[in-house]
Length: 473
Image (cartoon, rainbow, N blue to C red; front, side, top):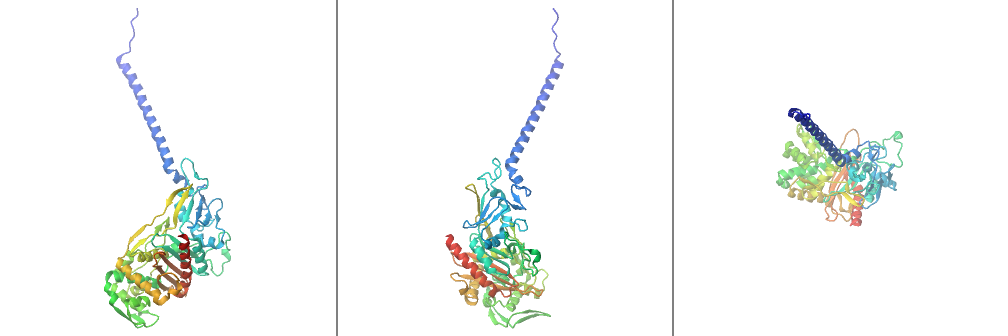
């Protein structure tokens, strides 16, 4: 009987090690595959929204603007159907009044708020895909009122500029019209615009422009003075019609004589404000400009406004005087300045404006706006005095008759812009009524004096706001 052959212990151990090594390698490969699959699945569910929102996606964008869903005003009036080649509102005035918020078909005018909420508006979900809920995308409800937008555009007439109103308690923008504008369904021949009627037509002046403020900036100077030296209310100022700074001069429309602090504000006396600027000093005024935030950009709903400008670091005394009056190198953005006025109305704490109130997709609310504080910018005592001063302007100088049924507090401005142009007409303020918490601003280019130009426009706009709010409630 032949002897049995046994493998040596050394050779058997080597084979076993090789099998174990292969098993370990296979296990590593399986783990890598599992991790890769998990990563891909995770990226699909987490990042697919980013992929589908890529600006080149034909499912979502058309000429750079979002191309799905519908947009309505605060009352449910259809403003825009984003699908196919975009269908705008039936009314031609409404189409023109909302163009700078909805964008045009060619992408010459953007719609940043709609793009910002694209993922909510298109109704994308990673399982069902684009338009999963209902097949058409969502509905964005804007804070704008269609009736007020149309009233504002008609009130602006042939003027270039902007007029806007927002609820200083909730932040809802009820109206923001910019001119010139056009009907996206009947585009003018811009090439034949010999007189420049459509100059700057692609600019949304409410958010993208910065204007010399003129005397509406005196609100800032008064606020800074009240914050640092409240006793200034008891001081008087003498206006002879001019204040001389060597070879330079600050001028006033007339010699006002002796004025109290409040009278200097009400009569918009340049000579008095030149003296107030000298008392304040450039460092203090610059500090409060920064504290009030009026030169900073404002961001909301994917929109970033133009920044303003107040340069006092190297200002000579006469330049400081003109800056305190709202001239020199002063610039303000209408949207940002309106929110500053809203903060005065609320007692010193601002509320950010917003344009989109709600987005619904397939019956589900995917976005709901809430009031957002912009922080305290001044004391409640200072705000209360400013409220009193602004109310006095309307009650005793501008006239309540222009604003029937509303308790309006305001300041006018005439902003010199040079270049042989007429001054810009400026007007800003708020409504003090509890049921109509509205702050507003109007900036009319080449308009002339602030009050005679802006008050008739704002009278129509605020009346339309009042009616819209009454109907909405």
